[in-house]
Image 1: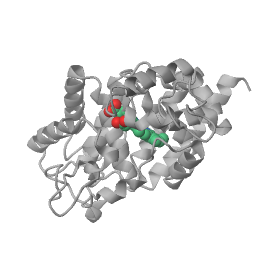
Image 2: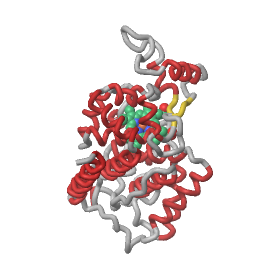
Image 3: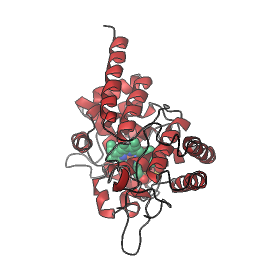
Length: 321
Ligand code: HEM
């Protein structure tokens, strides 16, 4: 079999496998077909308008969906505000740089005007993340809908978000606990084709790195200098995660091959033999990356979803009903 046939065969197997996983859920592609048929165009319009003004917000929406799904499942828990009795997920240090809440609010308001009390905040966030990827030049894909909003949002739960200091072994373990394969971990990490990170997320690589190195030896030396210059402006100074921060492409994987992954966790995907193979494949074949990313995103969007009376349709995404 020639290599292109092998790729096609692998893709077919993945489609069949993801169908198996999807089948067990009560979510569906046409969940709102009768109750709110315009939900998808409304979200898409709001997202497109906002991103036309500020394309960097695409990264914010994508990351927000990830942080929602990894904690308590995709249930909009990341959108809930703290109250005097409860410090919510969004006030965790890991979530302080999340952006794009106003886009979700605007979409929710327009949807409530059309079909009150029908569409969950969790679904709106999942759709907005999907539309942000497409707006930025990434793949277009359909996602199942019908998630319910959760009633719990606690800062302590965010301990389960991955830290940028994790190596591949730890990432494989953490993502594995959510049911993701190694290939899915690498594909999802490709979300770092969009956006930026603050110095506080990568400065540990630049001095006193470990007992034998001052600077992370996997870093390109010129890139390390640029990182140090950024950090000289303070912990909140930021740098793009790849050279094309507003384009959804495979430049992130090519950057890893040059030792120019900004986060330790990113570069570690190239340092590890098992994941390097996949990084190289995605760097050489953008279509393969897109295909694996969209499959993994559909699966991420199904994490611990709440159905029926396990959750509610929040009237305001900022607070439980
Ligand atoms: C593999 C484990 C991951 C780790 C350790 C990680 C960690 C981080 C860190 C530390 C930042 C920078 C935050 C800051 O400095 O303000 C970041 C940014 C970002 N992450 Fe991840 N992340 C991971 C996986 C993911 C996944 C699976 C997605 C989405 C599917 C994602 C989407 C993003 C995006 C889009 C940004 C840029 C945000 C912006 O510019 O506003 N990340 N991530």
